[in-house]
Length: 176
Image 1 (tube, rainbow, N blue to C red):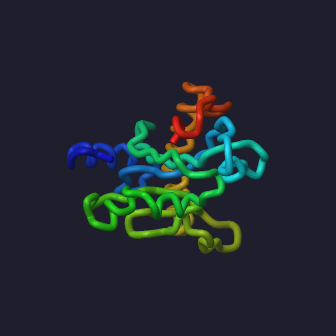
Image 2 (cartoon, one colour):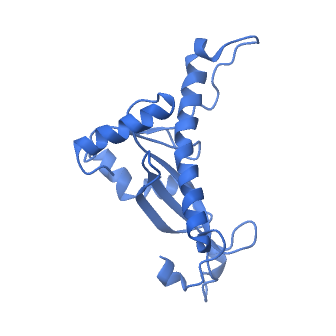
Image 3 (cartoon, rainbow, N blue to C red):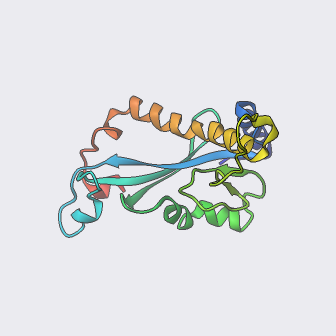
């Protein structure tokens, strides 16, 4: 997370320039990373619905696609919200160690004062209409466009390190 108020302000400004969403200090999401099958009783905990072994990795990135927080230890089936609720990052927001700014997540997260997610049922009037007349739609568009930095960051790191998109060939204890 930003180390000082100057970094925080710079980061908020860069996020704001993307789509006009104010106060963002990071975007959060999860991705699956295929791993070598762990030996023993835990193997099936990591076998996902597509029948390969993976972990669910949660990360936060800044506006320049740099990762500022990563948790890589949960079995594939662990819900994004569960990972966040168990994180020290959530605790820092709850205890106001991170006093200002919000994270942007997708609908896999619960909306909180410090974690904004898209509105699930924005009011959509009958056509013809313009997005600028409907704040809920404008808000969702800006949030989703800004949150896209997280998707791009995952794409960049998986292209740069192909083992993350193919398979990590190390023992589970080394991955975690």
